[in-house]
Amino acid sequence: MVDESHMRNPKLPYPGAFMGCGANQIHLMELPIMDPLEGRPEHGGRDRHVAVTVKSLDPLVESLDQHGVVYTMSQSGRRALFCRDIDQNAIEFVETP
Image (tube, rainbow, N blue to C red; front, side, top):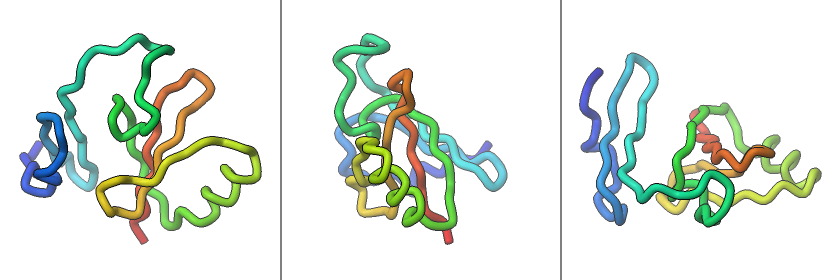
């Protein structure tokens, strides 16, 4: 693992680190403990989540809109979005063409 925290937005309002694992990156966030189903932040980027890379967000956005799935765009300025699965787990999709 390699510390890649220099890639982390310094304006984020919570402590954390970015750790490189080969071609992947793990984002560690120090957030308050929340109830697993209630009281979760609306924006998944402020919640514990897994991140997945995709070539394009456009087909995903189209499908989410078509199925009425709520999502929020990344607040970091990156081309990424957050949504939740049926168990309310947050998932980040990051566009990496």
